[in-house]
Image (cartoon, rainbow, N blue to C red; front, side):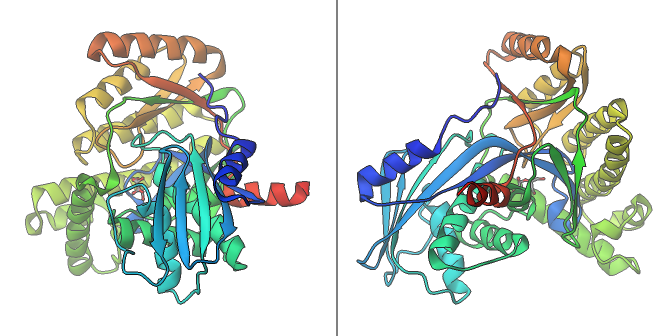
Length: 396
Ligand code: GLA
């Protein structure tokens, strides 16, 4: 049930060398789970994610034929692009994620030379654990190394976010890419998506983060995520226009929203209410974490789930069942849906000594209620791609 590494560097190197007869270095990017602060990132809000131990590995070697070739060892499939060709558009294919990173760098004026890249990963896809950001960040790390380009955390995160927004067509915020790059072992990250400043916060040692996959798949590019973002942004535009001193929802209070209630749709009002209350919960969650008040933290997670379900309207029946089952287990402080919504995973904080019984009971009761077998992983905050690269450099 632990989320141990299922892919390793040797496996990635071997796959790449067998196919392309070259390849030296392996770049690694984790997945992420968000503890609290959902759908707040694209309105300059607060989020509290952590990197977790699932990984995408990328190996790259140069090629001389003016082509970029991606090989997915997971799909056992190759996707090829001519650097001077017209095929740099979305295909609705796994290769959109790495190709998008190349496309953004070229949009920025970077000269990209030909290469082959092998990607292999163990991040569950469509589970709300940022498999796409993991692929993009692994791609970017390998590619920047190949091109000899240094960029800051924020710059690389923005390249990957642009790839997601402008090439793949999913209107995500910056949270996933940022924590997949900048996460640190044993720490959750409190990220202010307006200033892009962040703090690293310790989780108490006797608490476990348990992720339960409802097995209901979602994809960010499917449209519902974007619909919610549109509802939020149109509501935000009204509050910014009507209320002095409000530059984004981050500045707004519930009173601001109520004052604008008749100028926006009921849906926008409810979505914005979630954002405003969620930002406040993240602030309180930081205080609770620093005081090691896990009961308080868990209560905020419970409130966050109710807000996401009722005001944001982006949960689903199976996930609500999974959260309700988790929340009544002994030793569970709180649990909620995590990620973009409409399926995927829940995140739960559980006392270490109750974790095994928690996983068994949640699995059994969820199957009884829905007929679905959930995957549960016990996760620890792990290093992001930048720290992983630094460790590798240090090891040499
Ligand atoms: C997805 C997006 C993020 C964020 C979350 C919801 O993971 O990629 O930018 O909006 O959903 O918090």
